[in-house]
View: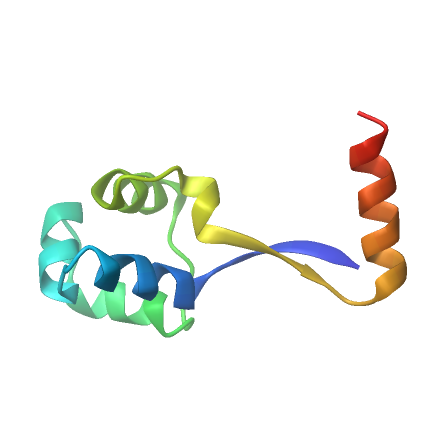
Amino acid sequence: MIRMVFDAEGLKRRRESLGLTQGGLSSAMGISASSLRSYELGYRKPSMENLEKMAKSLGIEGCELYRLEVDNKADIYWLLHEVDSI
């Protein structure tokens, strides 16, 4: 199975690479620091509204905060075949 999952660790890496604190990013987004912390720890996923605010504050597209999760090689081959046929 192939699925898109929120990349909590990627969020934290991006925030830190920009030199932002959790407080700084959460303030820019208009959410609490505890909400941002729960996103970074993977306890919660942001709503579409918060995802858009997050991406804008980080200077990226919202889709960059998601990653593909693949269960097995057959799924990878299927995906590559589908992409190649586009």
